[in-house]
Length: 264
Ligand SMILES: [Zn+2]
Image 1 (spheres, helix red, strand yellow):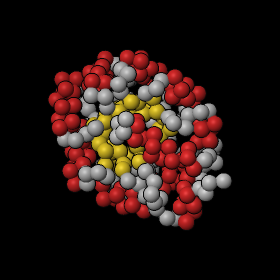
Image 2: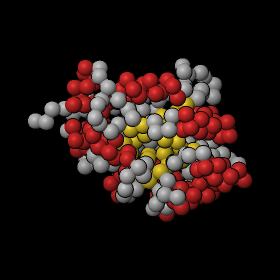
Image 3: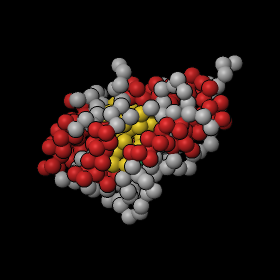
């Protein structure tokens, strides 16, 4: 059997070395009504270095909660100060459609290479099939950007028509395991552009194994939801999963490279 360098590093508490490890789902900034301990690029970088994560893909929590102008700047600043360690997902104010075109253009000029969308759930928001999302997804399609979509079940139905209609977008459907598992898996199987992303506080036992057994090892992408959740515990879900080291290598980095457009 090939030695499992992933489980061995985890057990020893060593950073992963010589592996491409990409966290596809992270955030900066405080919550709307609760503080987060050090929700900064420097704190996330320290965590990345402890674990062996080269790149974290970040969106801003204040931007998600209604303040795109100030929120995206937290990410833009990190992209300037730590180029190569962060990949920025831009958030736009879909509730104010007259602002969206300028925000998209400014975001791309500031170095953002993907979009993050967040519909509703913990806050009021528009469903993804609301007309205000049209220009956002059309822009992602035109520029072949990845879109990280917050999903907790019902949003899958709202996204399906967009997935069909905008084939140049790579879709990262967040929080697989939260609800509607079969539907997430069907999307990943049926649509070449759909990836499913793992971060979730509840960590359902056997989920990673089930996805690999279902033939989806090329479509699963690791993410942590740091700085909401801890990168280490979310990484452990993959390091210690009962799957092959090769499948772990894909889930922890190789699949994200394709999904994010870092390789063809
Ligand atoms: Zn998140």
